[in-house]
Image (cartoon, rainbow, N blue to C red; front, side, top):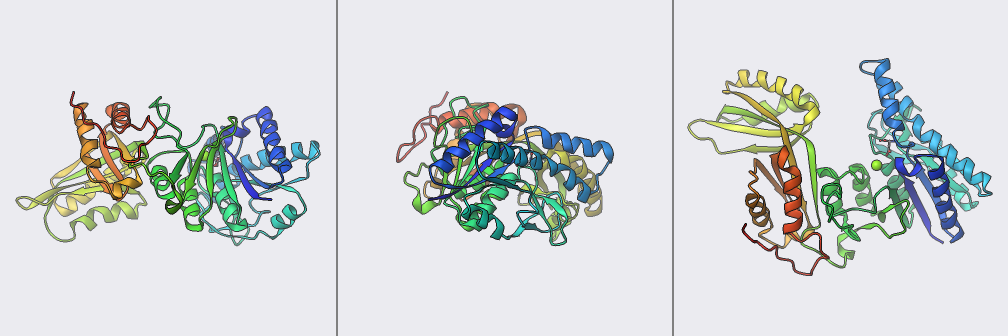
Length: 417
Ligand code: ASP
Ligand code: MG
């Protein structure tokens, strides 16, 4: 008998028929002899509705109250599923985050799980009860309701899998698994049978929305066997594996992209020690997350300093920088909100050189100008004009043969146009 955590996202519990359909799936898994913990999201669109209601009530909703309001969505879907299971003669019991003793810190909107007291869930499972847990929520040490950030039900599922030492954590969603690129942009994209945890972490951080990044971090830390699969298709989905266990190792695995980016440049920054910190310091004090940072060697006493932030934080960052520029006697600030980041991810980059130059070649061939470049061991990111995003993603996808089954050693074909 295996212990399986099944997490169903908003579209999978989107209406009554869908909840009945996944109940069927839960019953089937139980009949196969498995112990099942189900984690549910709010019904599709519900969290957004609760967020807008809150913003109608207060310009900046009090965070404690906001968490209480948005956490209600999951409570509805968990109880509907549990009562339906009971109605069909299956022993089931639902738990809110608080009842499940998912203990978090007190950041109400984006809390981190610090502990889970699994004793009552464990007892229910021993008694053959299907345990249904509300995703996305927990409680702090003082008993306040907290939420885990948008997409946080994934993290609930992975954390429960880690705490209960589950045999597999299955994330059911509305797509077949993790794709080589978003199939809405690249119709030829393939569903990957397997991806390593490190690659998945990069993909999730770089803009692929299939899993919450924190859930992937958690899975990595506790070595949780994780699978992403479709709620309504019968397929194996994508297994997130740990490198040593992965059989085939393609050089590149996938492409992630992010449109929600903006770029800021401080021009004519004096080349003297301490300038980078004078620029970035006030930005991080304002809690604005910085993504890429580019600074060149200065010439004739000054240099330009560029970095990217998410688009919604652009106005705030620009305002701060204009003050900073005056203080440090830089020439001025320019910005661009019409940029997008494309990233190529793959474990094979560790051992293969030339991936970056192939990627740049492909983009050059399409007449796409690269504005910024950042690399890590297993990814290369470029910033391009937003209007070239789709073209760039498709060209890189085709150029690296991501639409085909991976060969053991793949060399991208560099055909000039
Ligand atoms: N319902 C929450 C959201 O929409 C959490 C989740 O679905 O994972 O962000
Ligand atoms: Mg999600």
